[in-house]
Image 1 (cartoon, rainbow, N blue to C red):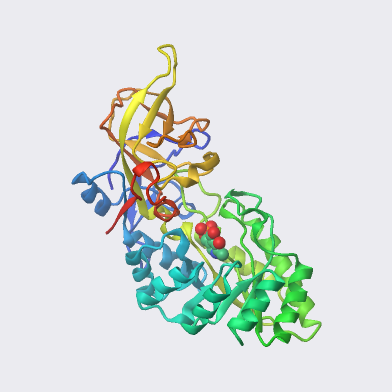
Image 2: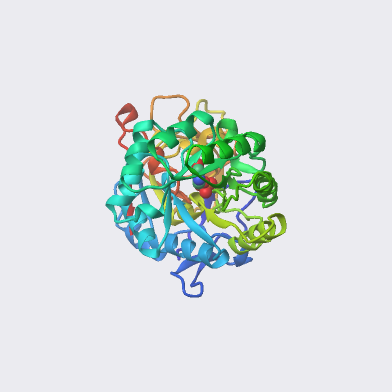
Length: 421
Ligand SMILES: Cc1ncc(COP(=O)(O)O)c(C=O)c1O
């Protein structure tokens, strides 16, 4: 582990114990654990493998991902919740080496589109381990997924159910419930899910259409800081199980969705072990009869802390000599990997190898000619006063929702390059 000084961070929650020590969880791959309260933390940092690669000064901007950290996260989740099948949310980082590592570990996959399905199948995934989890699908894609052997599908609307009955006959279907995303740093809004009452009607209809009314899903919002949100969602799911049992339909599966947080250098209110114990306790408390089949769909948790984004400073400036805040323009921005800085929602820890002690406030912006390409203005980041063009900055915990969000070439800037170690 490299003890690099942090030169910019989230001022609201200072990363007081940010410098990490290496640890090896029982039976797991080496991961990083922060010195303070290790169980509560998902490690954030730069592993030795990453550091060795970065020492060669790869062309920037680029993402560097240590797959051993991903493996450690997978194993930790399996250990914390062995009763659940892990369906990795491919959308969070669909890189073939990462997906291949998870296939080798026995993971299943939550896919959002036919290309994601083909990606997994092309790498050797068993179609029986794929879920077509997007509630918004074209008929031709449903048919193609079915033809490839996928038999597990999400829906939240009557028209979608009719498409599934026609193009994926006899498949297992699960209905996504609408839940509030209170407490999530990256909420998923009202775009997905339906009410418990509507889900009940639709699952009855699913059965009548020759599909298997398999279960229910929800997503409590990404980077969810409040464990209690799973209780709220599970109460709704249990209500649905009871409603359908009353009309003779036995639902079998609860999909706990994503939402498990990664660390952005600040203290997490719970660790993966607490998550597992909490969720399992809620399931056992709320559901009658035998425990349902459980599925969990982690995205951000799985790859987030496994990545570091190396960038170069392109320009440091002030708009007036009297300005106390400098503008720092870097070669990665909103359109080439850092889309989740929208609304300054996700605040990546940023480190500089300059260790001159003195820092000052900055506005950090990307390289394009678009004025929305400003990463952090209100968040209160600080960077070394000596920072200048050509210096490098590292954004930590960037392994999820970065490469897959990059545009194909806005302003001519290429999609974010990535290296998987
Ligand atoms: C259906 C579904 N499952 C899982 C995930 C992964 O969520 P997270 O990255 O918060 O774990 C997402 C993310 O958008 C999703 O849409």
